Length: 360
Image 1 (cartoon, rainbow, N blue to C red):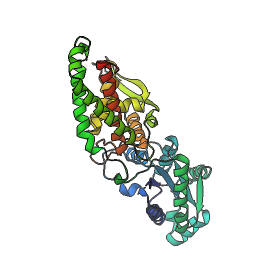
Image 2 (image 1 turned 180 degrees about the vertical axis):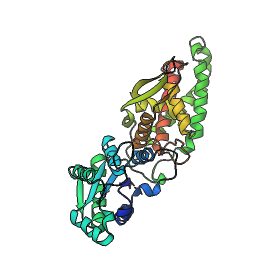
Image 3 (image 1 turned 90 degrees about the vertical axis):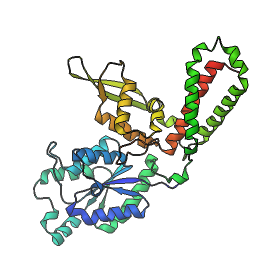
Image 4 (image 1 turned 45 degrees about the horizontal axis):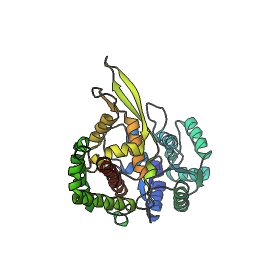
């Protein structure tokens, strides 16, 4: 199945316009999706936080290092391209770097003047350049080298990391037609659960409803079969069975903030929240929902810590069950996410039937 990968492009801007344009064109020509500072919309968030969110949402990080260190972020004292590069390494993002050779930088200086070479913070620039050259990177002399190196690096990283990427919706199984039936089944199961405590004393009455019960069981079997074959591109439920830590900021009795950690798996959490995700809830709604599920006491006030929440969201995107949040900041299940939701719901429904009616 053809996949598209989102590639985040990191570089200084004014001095590297030609190289950035070459990289964007090379990514597009290879059938993938470029992302970078040109796409950033106005936001009330700190610039570095917006950048980190775009890196989290991308499949691959690419650095193009020219002759300048770039704008320095006041709080850290490091340039934005260095912060971006270090964040990609810290979060384990698949990455590669291209750097202009000394000869290429000299030629740019001859054509455009000293503005394209670092004049102020040469020490930091040299240290950063040495760090980049000590890891996975390629030297380039001109734009045509970028056209050669970019698609090759994308292919290599996709193979090594088995990247999820993006596929056309028409290429995956559409479970949308079954959503209403699933929700109807959910309502029926909820009613049966209320009556579950009376199951033993009323078993005779239930036996008289055998035809109706068998019909429901048959329907559950059909839905189970649907969810079993509904995954696309080799997706498996076990993919989400990976460790998850959530940091919870809880308000103490004296108004102080305490950090509490919740531990489980992504599958555990998805099973708890997927019923809500069907209705495309807002980001804030999901954040409150998760806190309500993981807190130990009903009267505790708190919130899921921001960085922990963003990592969790990015991981769900990487695992292929939710779409990257768009401008409306709503959570949306992918086709595989909808199929997994159906499978989990059917599984829970079958367990409930067994508990009430017994094995046949």
